[in-house]
Figure 1 (cartoon, one colour):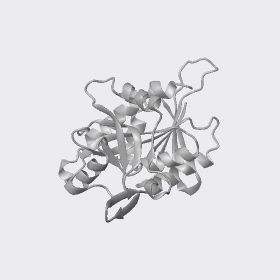
Figure 2 (cartoon, rainbow, N blue to C red):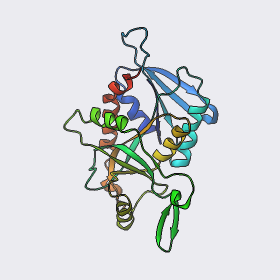
Figure 3 (spheres, helix red, strand yellow):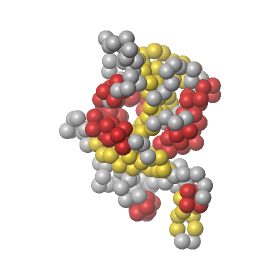
Figure 4 (tube, one colour):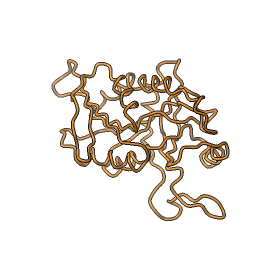
Length: 250
């Protein structure tokens, strides 16, 4: 399987790479736009007919626009053979209580653009209800379920299969958290890039899933309560554990 993993910042990419046990670094490959792919391949004895799993890690920038541009660039301008089989949006994010406590992992069964729409006197309207575009990408249940099942192999790590919201402005008040919870009662995490990555993957007809390690609770902004280190550890664990998925269909 040839996998593209897109993170927002370098620290998240480092955590992903740190989890790729058994993979050999292939070095940096430069692309149009100044983007760099960090390639990794798993060289292990296998039948000649079985493809070598390759994972490329891309720092795409913060927010849905930046992540969409970076992902689309990697997918459109890649000259690698074979093409990508899977795109993963990965990083840390906020967790909605009580679904996703600090340090837990959230695997998307839906990737939702939670603030793409219009405010009206009667409340918020998502852009699809206005007749334009879409606000939800749904990974195939077999894909998201398989990822969640593999990650749940360690009983010490809480894994949640639920919608992940994409926002352009991170939630920082109780009122905003309550509004998002009312509109998306099953949502377990909030981040800023997933929908952009998923939209680019959709345009190229490539499956996409989002994985978030929870570093803070969605609600009033309190940086002293953030637990970025443990969240990065959880992200590293995730990619150390996902090798069986990357070996499938290889």
